[in-house]
Image (cartoon, rainbow, N blue to C red; front, top):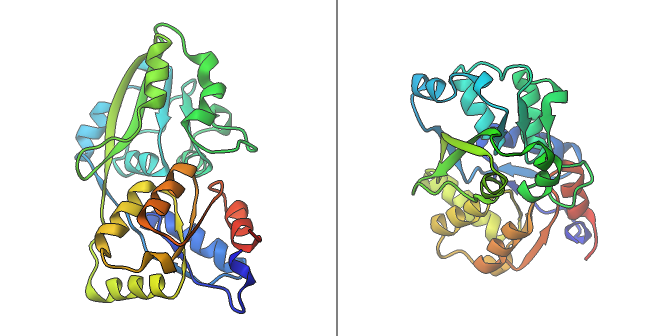
Length: 260
């Protein structure tokens, strides 16, 4: 696909700044020119004491769902203690699994989709954790909200409540559009015009890019999206070429290098 050209196109990594570094390093090691251009800024949603109070006692829970690496990072930044032994920690994707392990959570305490799952999302996680959920099961979902207060999908929350679980949520961080100066805006505009490949891990990031560059010639741009829903958002914006793949470095590299 993208590798058929005489020279490899620039790959634009749009993940939040604290997640982008590993992707930049991995893609460069695979031989791709890379630009980190975060399209979501992560900021704390509450002062640290308030967040610590919201998750005051892990022992009162049977499981905690961490929706993203940012959810784990927000708790660490607020000096929330590592979850107690015996608590099941749910992670929808490999990035969240790594964040939990880096925090000090034992790998055996983490539930996540199988390594060969077609997608890394709540639907893939559900068959893994469904046997744990029963009437009276106590679950905390640690998540973020967008700048307009939207918390994202409630698919897993609704499944757990439907199975009789008691579910609480805590907002640990906010997702905001980045603030670009003229230099950054020009850099992004050149990437679009030159046919760079934009790597999207969030539909919200696609929306932020649309708002930041409302007049961009999207038909010249190309994208790899790490979920079909994100791919739909990129196509709706007008990207000339869109491919979806799983959110792992080997899968992204394969998508970059493979033919249509």
